[in-house]
Image (cartoon, rainbow, N blue to C red; front, side, top):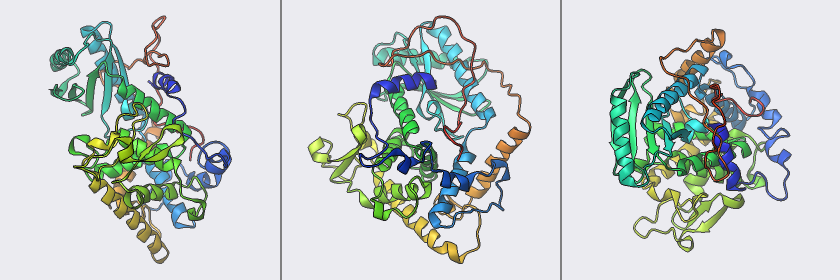
Length: 428
């Protein structure tokens, strides 16, 4: 999946820029292209040592917040068992579709394919070359898939075909794992957006830390669902990239560049207090820029408050136009910014405790959730489990050319396990 998506990314061009013209990469992201070594050293404890007695070594508010962000990233990473189960579910769906459409090729996209998923995230799949060339044919093909799912030996429940959506899909829940799966047919936009996410993942070290955290933050507030006007994964990723492309001016930076605490604060400040949603939008193409919404043709007289975000894949599309509940997101950003600053100001007057900062924006139960997640990682490290879920192993998708067209596979290959959640570069 990763190789397929990354090949597509190579054809998208340089949509992001790591540094300004007068800066070098070392000053922005550390000599290894990751988070600076001084900051990595603050979070090198093994995950098994995390507990209620966790002591943070950061001497400032931003440094402690940096450590908490790293802890949360580690906790939310999938275990090997969770990753293997997802691969098995994808493999089962692939076998089912190959019986219905012998020429079809199944690919994952979204957060699963770009390794940015949470334990609760669903799996987004697209089947190419099914022969369904129009919407009516796609809906018919999805009905066939739904019928096959009802008799699948591994069990599927809550099966639903949503044929009236702009992109028709079939949704279901895998019975034993309770994992949600969405399948669409012959749509390449999801693969392209996933390729874009993979490229941002490579270019911006902070990207992989901020996106899962902010997804968690949105879910807590019920603001992650695009059907209710929330911020979906693609729009969130564009917002994160834009905030990374436009860091605070040097006088405003109180700590080393690359500090994840300062980066998170900057995100909340930009989208909660600084950006004028009625007049200004943003684009990440060609290093990033801001534009006048009305001159770009993205103004909406009936809803001038909408966030405008140019789609780097199709620049005529405003990704933010459907996020009609963006005012709630903006308010939540402003509140989280102020809450973190207030928590930071109180640090010197309170005894140290784990998550004394992130719990202000993610809830008091966050500590217990993280303890549970770290316990899973620790148990797996001590005794790697043997996964047996009664499902076939997933097969790596075929490679693709720069236009996203799959290349023919010369011969069957042995199934390969994809490493989900593996940190790229140095382990922070």
